[in-house]
Image: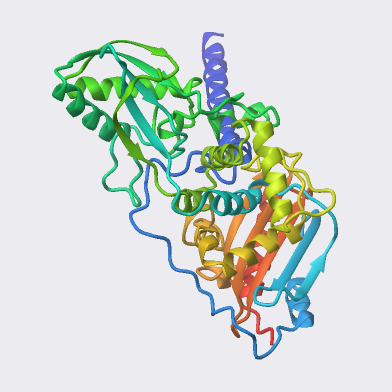
Length: 460
């Protein structure tokens, strides 16, 4: 009897191990990819910063064409792409030089997911200017007793300096060193530390975002570092609930390392009579926008939108940001009937845009050098960003290194927005929007294959 009972316990143990293993696999393959465009997005690749620029755009000069791409041939190529498990499709392909429509499927608005970042990044560059930067600043109160760390809304601010990253973001470590030097020059070695994140009004969490995204976007504040991630490891998704306090605690540690004792920290508003000690400037908006698009950086996309709201004289809030985005898209001619935007990063499933707006933004960026960071930031199929691990199927490899496009994935929605150059030299701008169907895998395969079919097309 005891032997039988022992066998039963061993069987139960193995069953438990198997259940746990299956749960882990399910988390990795089913749940986690739903959090954002792929398991690495939301906070970008903080664990593995880029060390060089992405490959240059493969694009002929957008001059008057000598011949027109054939709409019939484009349609033939796309019709040949298998559609097993595919749901609803709304798609548009145009000649990027002329805007001539070459292919259209479906009609109306659809949820763009992170393809919305194409629109919000373009608006940010257009309104703020490609060279605009945001300063993180330290001040000393008039009584020399308190240092105030004031956030300027730099979404890529790092904690520790990252000399090997390209491009190098501003860091709290660098700011602490400059601040300590200025304090010691005044004979100050002990201070209280206040932090001021009042540039953004909030609420820090957009009410249009599902709670599940709390692991792929942090609360949006004017003072944050390392995307509020306590760990920069690739598979670490934890976010600090109070990004401003999290950044301040890091800064206090860096000050201590520089010989400045910190007696305590608290949230403050910078006094009007405080004097500046030091500041560090963010990367320019053009570089931030490239990062937003390449890595599908949810935090940075939303932060840029709030900066646009401030530039237009509005408060930095989710509602004001969304209102300003709609207004700016209308001004740029990128607004159609039925469209609705609730954020800048595409997390909300209630965002609704047309493929025409997405394609229009791609064409606008290709034609205007000031807006070109939008297309320069698009992931390269099979090479960079959120497309690095895609386009590996036999009938999709033709798009590797040629297709450049922004991904978009939330539950039940998969999109791809960008451009490709055909084998005979036609630059084609496209937006492919899918929803429903058998699941994410089927949709992504079709998106990869369809865009690869455009790249490998002899469409004259």
